[in-house]
Image (cartoon, rainbow, N blue to C red; front, side, top):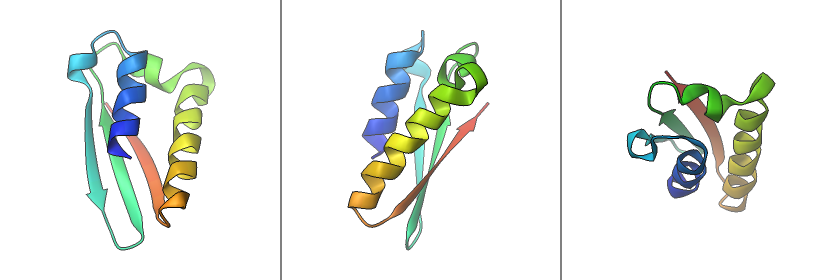
Length: 76
């Protein structure tokens, strides 16, 4: 799952080397913290948050197969 978020984020940004994904696991849920380089935040969020919403939808669908709940936080 972490690799999925990382792959999508690296495909969107100008500086893929600065993409960091941190995974915080709980019993039934997982939180993914996504950090990108300066100037790339808008590309990950997208217009009106559409890109971020699409990434979250993919993450939710993939995590449901594993029986967990996933949440994505995009950090400046």
